[in-house]
Image (cartoon, rainbow, N blue to C red; front, top):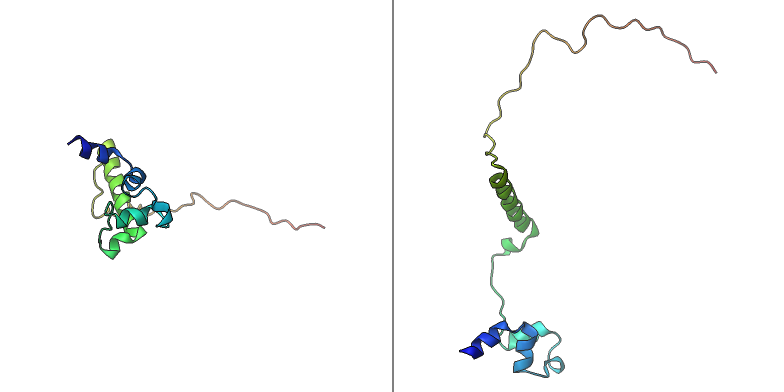
Length: 106
């Protein structure tokens, strides 16, 4: 049983070298050797999970949820209330300023 614990603690390079000491002469990379020796294997996944935008959206969603939990933020309401409009008031108050036009001199 101790033998399986030892093999689990070894990194991938050590595991490959233990099974095939001269792997560099046979394989272009450590991963090719590990794959052929059955130490690693590819997982089949949906193509949509490979898109960076989908992965980024999931990370962003998790970050937003963590922020809300940390700062006790409630979800935003589905619809925002209409803006308050004050009628009868203009932006300018009072009469327009009295300005004289001047000519530019050269």
